[in-house]
Length: 169
Ligand SMILES: CC(C)(COP(=O)(O)OP(=O)(O)OC[C@H]1O[C@@H](n2cnc3c(N)ncnc32)[C@H](O)[C@@H]1OP(=O)(O)O)[C@@H](O)C(=O)NCCC(=O)NCCS
Image 1 (tube, helix red, strand yellow):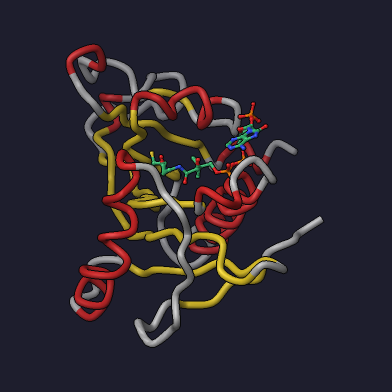
Image 2 (spheres, rainbow, N blue to C red):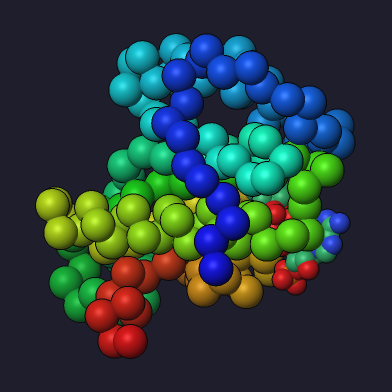
């Protein structure tokens, strides 16, 4: 059952103290310093998520694409194409609100939005550049690593969720 409501970010909201560790500070900095401009420039669309406790987190989404040769041939056979995608640029749940399923619910919301988008325009994947420490978290939620990215050398790992799965259920 859904516990969160969604509100498009305007920059006029009174944001709470989400609570964050040093390693997550960039997520707060983005929201308080860059988000308004990103949105104004149409580089990203930001959504705030509201629980019983008030705002608990946000996501920033945009469109992107992945070269099909980077993915397994089984999935999409024509090698030369770029595959359209919805990109989760940022996903954040405040420290005080973690472990309650909110992050999972926000991901499900993003996947639903991508599926809706796929009825309007080409959109096959949901993609994310996952921090190394979050790869397993995304895997548990149906995401796969994009192969051949030289992952071991990178801090972030590109991952994808194939919307085609939803047609098979
Ligand atoms: C990643 C993130 C969005 C997850 O949000 P969340 O609301 O805690 O997610 P969920 O509650 O759906 O899942 C949390 C998992 O941690 C476990 N958990 C339990 N107690 C927890 C707690 N106090 N704090 C965090 N996680 C806890 C949950 O059981 C769950 O485990 P599972 O993966 O085995 O199912 C959140 O940790 C976050 O914002 N981190 C900082 C920003 C970040 O790294 N974003 C991702 C960028 S790639």
